[in-house]
Image 1 (tube, helix red, strand yellow):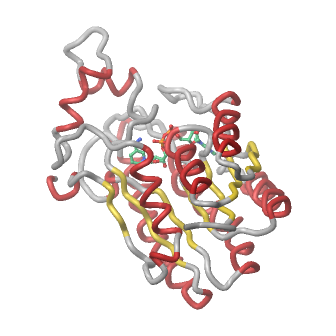
Image 2 (cartoon, rainbow, N blue to C red):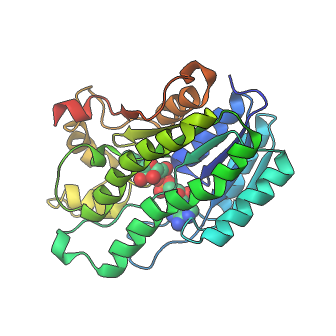
Image 3 (cartoon, protein in one colour):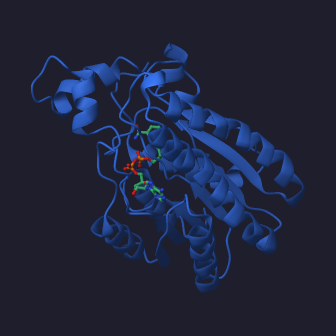
Length: 276
Ligand SMILES: NC(=O)c1ccc[n+]([C@@H]2O[C@H](COP(=O)([O-])OP(=O)(O)OC[C@H]3O[C@@H](n4cnc5c(N)ncnc54)[C@H](O)[C@@H]3O)[C@@H](O)[C@H]2O)c1
């Protein structure tokens, strides 16, 4: 479906980003993969490491596609811009952008959020997406007409709740950014859409901090102990979706099958939004 296309993916070292890299490669795309491999000091679960990133490279190459993997933090525009330019120079262009990199805060009441944490969450989850688009769009325009941008937001942008004001605010802003980009890029036949996953089976939810938040009654809660709490959020009888469920939606949005779809907010959420 994506033969000969070249896709940029941020946060590609593991989780959904790695899955997007593999699925897009399976459909015939070459990959520019970016990841920071850095864990902010206040975070309660670790971010990806070089071994994770090497595994993404291995899996894409196993599919017979080319991959350029660059270490860059989406908060650092100059580093990201250089990484994207190097990838484009090596692979020969850019057609698809997946602004996927994101971090999840520990969760506390809004007035108790540490300002440094607030800044980091907004910097990665919102400004980092702006940086990704800013670095990528000139290459899409050069290659065009055509191209597809998919931003990764969250169900947290669509439903209300407590304890994650920084995360929800950043993810909600991506819906507006998507619509603005859809307007600005439509004359070039470049589409921009945003995807809102429910809980996804990655390290972002499977970590001790979240387990303890959801099951304060247990001394050492594990994966099985939090299934019911996650399942209660979804309409369909599952606790979380798999990374590949998000990747499949991205493959479709990136392909010509979605050629007239732009400015759309697409929940991949097992009915989570409807239920809330
Ligand atoms: N897992 C979920 O339940 C869930 C639900 C809705 C939305 N999301 C969103 O999906 C996206 C992917 O998350 P995931 O579930 O794969 O989590 P993950 O933690 O497994 O992956 C996130 C990746 O982003 C990278 N990253 C973090 N900060 C970065 C930075 N500053 N610059 C570049 N890379 C950076 C990490 O190293 C990691 O490889 C995120 O935007 C997240 O907010 C996740």
